[in-house]
Length: 414
Image 1 (cartoon, rainbow, N blue to C red):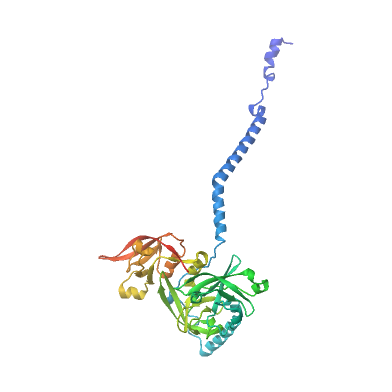
Image 2 (image 1 turned 90 degrees about the horizontal axis):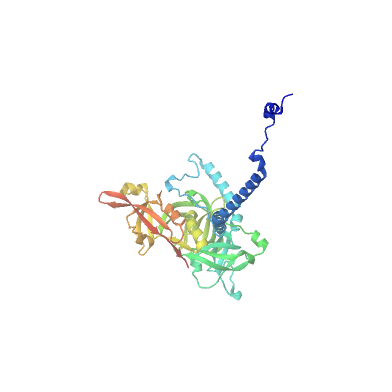
């Protein structure tokens, strides 16, 4: 046997002192540290969310909820008249045309009942002892249910009637009549808006009504078959069938309107709605002091109608313009766009520096070719918004681009 010293040297390798790795020794402390770090991270994230992100999210939610408190109407893209295609092929024979016409008329007649569901009659409120029949009332006109909003029916009707002093009533049928509240009216287009509370009608009465579908009137072609309903031939419940005899464009303040000329007569001072063969609205009768068969295309009225409903007014820039067609370009060497023929004194356009003779070519950097496109941009604005209007202005060396900042206004209506 060796000595102790020899044994110690011999077994030194096996007698080393075992020392725990720090990670093992302090594993609970490390775990606690990780938990605390995780908790701190969560708290920091929560603080960042509450201080910075939550207000932004809440603002977006509020804006979304706010959007629920407005009526939105789908807009349509303008189509030049020369690009519209006819409804029937040139190869149809006389017998084919006759059969197509008879089939189309049969289809039109089946749409009358659905058309009537979105129509009402509007009149001045009269004493109970002197309520005339529909046929005898000289003031009664048609109304169109265009929206259901905040438990109210919104009804489009004649501005001429609403300018009459007094209260107004809406007749949903011969037995159902209630009072109405004026929202606003516009003399330039001759349209007005009134509202009726849904609570004044029973559930059965409400179920018998429908909201009108406002179609794309830019798709209407010459020769199309149409239905007119409203005050025709001195009766507010008149229904007539006809065709689109012609289409032209009339220009007004900050707008242009397609005018459909039909062979259906609207009584003097009357008000009627034009429907296509699917029973959808394509036009509103044009205000006239005499019997007429002219209707304004509904697509050109949608932006204005939406603003009238939501803001009780119309957007205002102050120009009168017209589309520069190929014919005008060839005749007067005008650039493409909207030719300004007049500027209202003291209007937003006047103060911005726009002039008669300018040709609007762009709004906010986007190309503008028609007054309809100009109106669409205008009606996307709120009161006081700025439009960057680029025009081509003629000088000694021809036309050059000039831009103006126009602060548009919401023009309140009566």
